[in-house]
Image (cartoon, rainbow, N blue to C red; front, side):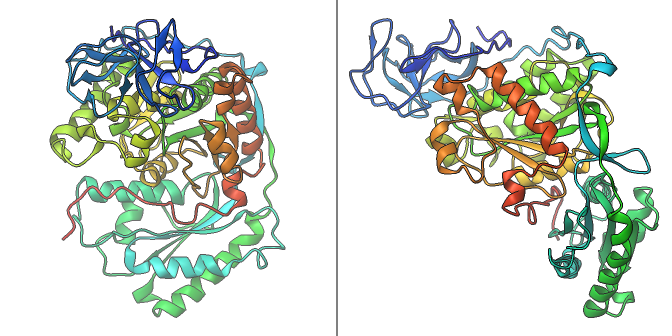
Length: 518
C-alpha cells in the first residue's frame, strides 16, 4: 500500500489490540498480551507480546512489507504466522523506493480571521519580537570561556533576583567548541548563527558574550558575520583584555546588574497566538507514540497554524523512511526537494549512512518500547508536524521567517535539535515521550507530553499532559489536542511547566558540532 496518506483515528477502539488501518498486517498490543489471548476476529496470540509492541494480524510471507498506518516500516525476514510477535527479530530494515510526488497533496490552510484568533499574554520587545519568558543570558564563544560564563550566571541566585520579580533568571549558554575547529565554512557559520540566535532571542532581555581572546571563534568575527552591535542590551567581554578570569567575572556581573532594572520593567500584554513559534521534539519514544502523543500534538499544531502560528519539525534522521509523506504536502516542488537534499546529505555526505539512525538502528529504549527500526520511529515522529502543508525547510539554526508548518535540519539528539530550533526563533518547546525523557530548554519553556498512563503516573512531577488518556478511552485525540493547545497558551502567558518547576534547562544548550576537530 504505502500511499503516503496517514489517516489517524480520533479514538482507538477498545480491546486488547489496536488496528491502526484496515490495510495493516500488524496490530498493536494495548497492554501485555499472553499466549492464547483472543485478540481480534477469532485470532489467538501465539506469543507473549509486551504493551506497545506488534502482533501479526494475518500470515505474513517472507519479504512481504510490514504495514503500520498503511505505511511500510520494514520487511518480514521470515514467514510470520498470524498471532505471532513481530519485532526486530523478524522485521528487517531494508531500503525501498518512495515516490516523493512533490506538492501533489498540497492544500492551503483555512485560516481563522484575525479578530477571532486565540491570544496569550506575551512580552513585546521594542523591536517587535514577542517573548514567552524574560531571562538574561551569558554566552561563551569558546569552551575556554565557559567557566566564566557559568560563574557570572551563577551569581544571580533567586535570592539576589528577589527584588526583580519580572525576571525569570540568568542563564549561561556555554559549549565545548569554538576553537580547534575549521575557521571558515559551515561549521563556524553554524556555531555563529546559533549564538546569534540566542543572543538576540526574544526571551532574553539582555545578553553578554564572553570570549577568551585567542580562539578561532573571535567575538569581532561573530559580531560582524551576524550583524550584531554592542548596545545596552548586548555587551561583550574578552578575558585576555579584561584582566583574566576573576576580573571578567566581576565585570560581567556588574554589566548584568546594570541591565536588571530595565529588564524588570516588562509588562505582559495580550497578543495574537500568531506570535507563537514552537519547536517540536520527541525522545524516549515507544510503540504508543504514533497513537497518542505525537498525533495529538500534530492535531494541536494544526489548530495553531489556523490561528497564524508556526511550528518547527526537526530531527532529520527521525523522518527518514516517511519523508515522502511530507514532500507530498510541500507548498512547492522546491520546498520538497530541499527536504530531500538534506536527507541525501545525511546519507551520502555526512556519514555515508553509518553509525546513525539513518542505518535503521534505534536506541535500546526505543526497542524496549516497541519500535523495531528508524522507519517505525519516523512514522510516529513525523506525526508531530500535523497534517498541514510544509511551507519551508531551513538549515540548522537559521532564522525561521515563514509561518505555519516548517522543517529545520537537525540531528536526532534532543538537546542539539532543540538548540537549533530556539536559535531559529522558537519561543516554546513541545516534547513528547513514551519512556520518560527529562528535559528543559532555557530560555524557553518546555511542555512534556506522555504517551501512556503508566509512565505518566510514575513521572507525574516531570510530565505536563497525559496523552495516554487517548489509549485508555477517556479522551479523544481531538479533545487532547485542544487540551494541549489551551495549555500552550497558558504557558506562553507565564504559567510554569513541570520542567521549569524542577529547574531543568541549564545544560541543554548544545550547538551542533559538524566539523573536524583538530
